[in-house]
Image 1: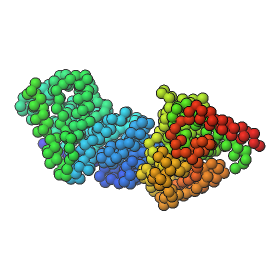
Image 2: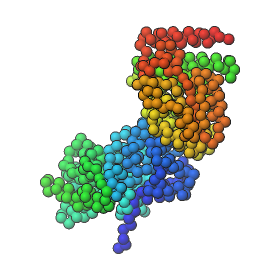
Image 3: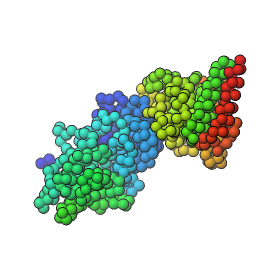
Image 4: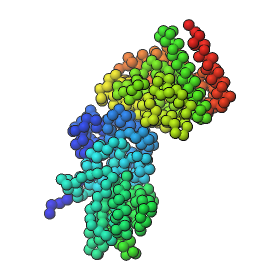
Length: 315
Length: 283
């Protein structure tokens, strides 16, 4: 068996933009002095006239992107999640969300797996911030294949889209030939009826490993990839809750305001189900290697399996 | 500028002022002070400067105007209505529940509004983005204008946008700053001194020109300078009087965000009607 390819979704972002740029002259890319890290440098190299460095001024970059969208362009404004969703929150709300302008926010370095940079750069609040803005689509792809497809889908979608990508190289598990991405659609990856594991981003791969572990113990877990945080695929979630009777959510994000609470809110109204939320607790991160931190903050497959096990055994 | 033209602009500015009073009185809220200080500019922009078409408000090749000091929407709305973008009779519905005339400009509900604004500092960023896009799209005729307040100059984002405008040599961009000297909490000089705005903007790479914002000939000179500029953005600094044209509102910070009551409405409209009669009587 050949080794599984490992690619960071920020690389997929750069390559996705490059592919888009080939076909679409209305695609322009903005960056805030992070082109090497966000990987928009790949696009800049190919299309220097369509890449606008805005310097370290994220608020202006995001609102300038709104102005470009008002002129008919499709700007991808790129920086770290912390400075996009965090620093430029109000520009995204008032200059993009409120007028419903066709801007795509490419936010790399989401989550705790940013690693060594530490808490100041580990954005675990972006889902909460972005999903609170009316009309914004929020995407968090799980691997290279899905991330590149998400970039294209974001372009084809009319309206604001927030895309979160990761810094850490993660396994590519989707089959590029067969994979089809649709905004708002969850993807069921395994059959299972004892517990549903709803995951997003790099947690999807962890959930798949957890499901294997659970299988050995006789627990069948239904793993669902929710790459669209908003709008939620309500059908797939409610069906899974009804059929499994137990739900675990997994995200590289605070348990406050993210996927877990979105799912809890939905199920609380439509199908009350016992749940566990795997995510970053109400704490800041710290420096460390990415995998170490994922382990330490309870985001690896073993933590997911433990949460699922506990739910199933207390049925 | 001919006397005839000057008179025409004065009449239009008086109509803008009447619209501001109608709107804020109808709303029982809103921002008359800064709308009145910029009334002459609004008239000048919509009757002399901007290439716009009220019959086709989304015309692709139009000039863009962004009201970065979005709270002075009553002035912009009055100018747009009098230019034919929507009925003047709608102005008193300003801020009413269900009205398309939102408290701050909404590009999706108000014909002629090019950008939704209201949160200070963001409008100028949107405007420089538009100017950059016009360059990229080779829309060489398109010019982009943003109107800012002097209090707004304290927003850090304004200066980020200025860096961007100079860096990308946006000579199709003109920032207009309404230096009326007053903001909500008092004199700008006392709240947070932004002076000298001209030297700061010059240092940021703008060609700056200071004019009397109530003198059409001087405004014309300012925009002529903008039209000639190559390779750098222009800033027109307008010295103005807050509340200009309504005697009891002039120079009063208190009229920044307060609507006239019925008696004040009658007094203001009386002054403006007298001004209009005077203009129409003049040869």
